[in-house]
Image 1 (tube, rainbow, N blue to C red):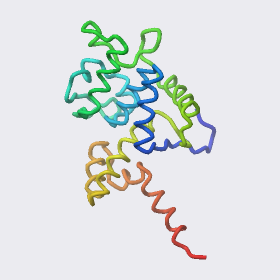
Image 2 (cartoon, rainbow, N blue to C red; image 1 turned 60 degrees about the vertical axis):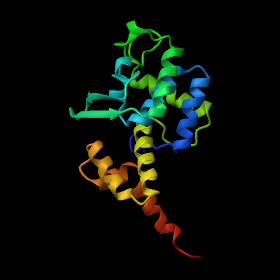
Image 3 (spheres, helix red, strand yellow; image 1 turned 180 degrees about the vertical axis):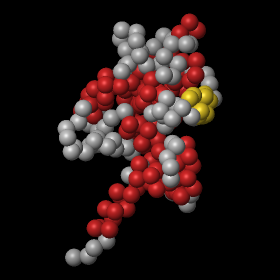
Image 4 (cartoon, helix red, strand yellow; image 1 turned 135 degrees about the horizontal axis):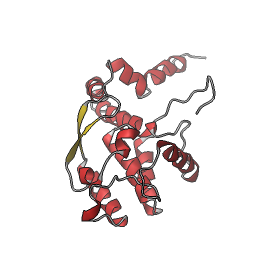
Length: 199
C-alpha cells in the first residue's frame, strides 16, 4: 500500500533495457521471472491475466485467446516469433514436460500461483540488482513498456496516431487521449513546453 498523496503510477522501461533484463534474469537462472518480464513486454496483458497463463497457451503456440479478468472482454494475443524461442528455452530450463502443459507458467517455490505482492517484491529486488533507472517499477511497468514500444516503433515511421488508435482499442481505453497519457506522451509533451523557453 502506498502512502497517502504519494505518486505511484508505474513508469515504462526503454525497450532495450527491458530486453536486457529478460536476458540477464535468464542467465542468472531466474527462468520464471525472465519469462514473466518477457511475456509482460510482448503480450501487453495485465498482471492478473499473465498469472493465469498456462504452458499449453504459450508453449509452441502462435497465438492464444483469453477473456480479460478486469474487462471480461475476449482478446486474441499473437506470440512474436522471436520470443517463441525464449518461451521454449525457459520451459526446457524449468523441465516442463507433457504432463505440465495445464500448469500455470508462474508458480512459486511451493507450487501455487505467485501473488502480485510477491512479484512486486521481486521487481524491487530487480530494480536494485540490475541497476534499473526507473522511478516507479511495478508489475504494470510491463504493460506500459509494451504499449510505449509499439507507439515508438510506429511513430518512427509516421504512424504514431494510428498506433494510438490501435492501442486504445486493444487496451480498452475510452479514447486515444487516455492512451497518450497512459504511455507518458502527455507528460512528455507538457514538459517540452518548458524546454522551448530561451534564456
